[in-house]
Image 1 (spheres, protein in one colour):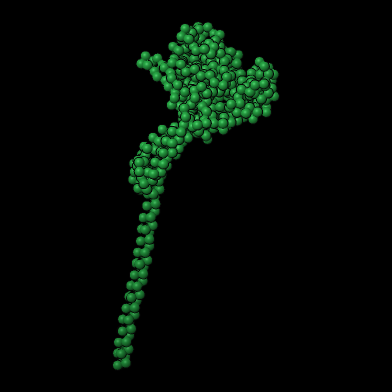
Image 2 (image 1 turned 120 degrees about the vertical axis):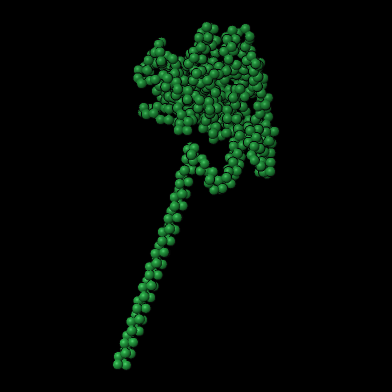
Length: 495
Ligand SMILES: [Zn+2]
């Protein structure tokens, strides 16, 4: 019984032990499960937080990136301080780059002003050194001798001489005489740059004072200065209209704007396909000056002399294309080939292109509306012609005070314009104060109280051919014509 009661006791104890063990195991298991649960809970919470904050980052980035949306602007201010810390540095770098560009264009005052406008410029030794450098460069410049400023001019350039010079009629003879090829233009531009020539504006040569009643007075600009050895020259382009007669001659067909809103050309290739690019003087010179800022004084470009009778810049903007009255055969043919032509749209486009050309530094001048011979024409003819220019060209390109005469004619011989020259009086009254003719002498500049007149030199096939093959070389001061003449030229027939 004792044994029995003992074993019973033992049994009871064993049972108790087992229950305790089971309970412990369950408890431990529960704890483990709880621990695992807590671990996962914490992990997912952490993950959530991380993904939330990265979402936030992305949100800020996408909202800040488009600078054009005004809503994004306040977000930028809440961005970390690194932006504001970077600002002065980039400002400084940009200002120094801009100053270097200005100094390269001989605008030393502009460069110095740019640097001095920077915050803390006075304590910045690098800035001070640059200011001193530009000041020294300015001080070493010498005034341009007004008696030695030449003026060169071009017509539209021949891209494809095989087409431009084809045929043996008077039209092809004209192309061979008056036109310059793209290759010749590029070589001349480079050679003149290498020889120290710097493009200036005709108006850079003078100081103009205008009285209250509108009377203008001119004196030579003694402040026009360039580094020693540099030579100022003026440039103009005649007849940038892309006349109908140019069609199929391997010349650009119109000035258009590229994807950056800069002037470039449309050109119809020999196979009939149309391409866009630098196929004429405006974009070619723009490119050259962009690459060589010291080729131009304060960003000067040339003057573009426009007629109006076939429109301007390749746009058929003359009123005749709208009224369809007094059309020439080629105008009629062009209108027939363009049944969707809209005169108002055409004028709008031409105006946009003209504005972009002016924004690039070019100026517009009158070449008379009808390409008339100013010397031979009667005063009445000149008046009617001027009215037409002011009605159909000026609204597109803006008013101008410059007239570049066609056919190389002038109001009088080389003597000063006299007050009793009625054509001169009339043109003065119409706001023209700058007059240009064609004169193959090296320099011809008259700066008078009431007008400025300059002779221009044709850098065309006639000139280049004769400088290479003729008896007298008239361009040796500018370049070596033998290095310029296009090998595609085989002759220069007389007209
Ligand atoms: Zn002309």
